[in-house]
Length: 171
Image (cartoon, rainbow, N blue to C red; front, side):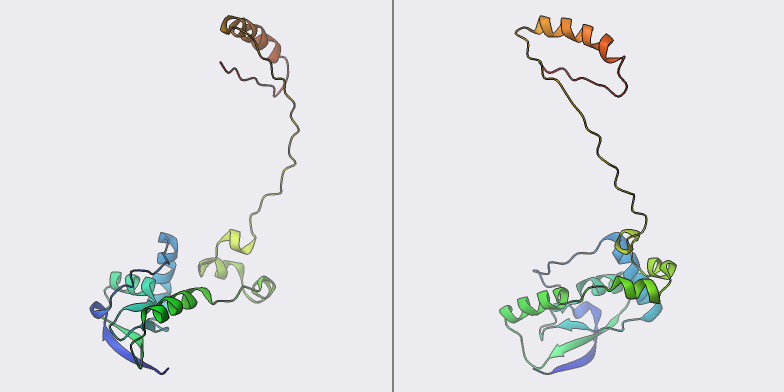
């Protein structure tokens, strides 16, 4: 299959109804920053009928930025529904993983955070896992609600003497 690159009116593009990707507000802000700084350096992939196969979020963001034209990759023939489904998923799924050692040794953390990484993604700010406190309990069953009320009054005075102790009454 051959692909050609063309400049088309952004309003001609139609969103693919099955596109499974979405964009958070933070991701949209980062995408907008990138598009503002570098322009559209990656073409939108469309079918012959101008349905977007890959690049939905970029088109949505560029429309919001007021852009009138976009660069698209257009196939040499109309793709059938099965091909569109597969290509849509592959364009969004076929990606590698980050080598965090290379990132840590080659880039400044401040830049990586500014360019869209989160502290969690970079493994920063993780709290040490606190050891779980052991807890012990007593389960007491009584025959009448009046006995429960009576015992609760007595328990509240006893429990106050134990640091961190609590009780729960269920009727």
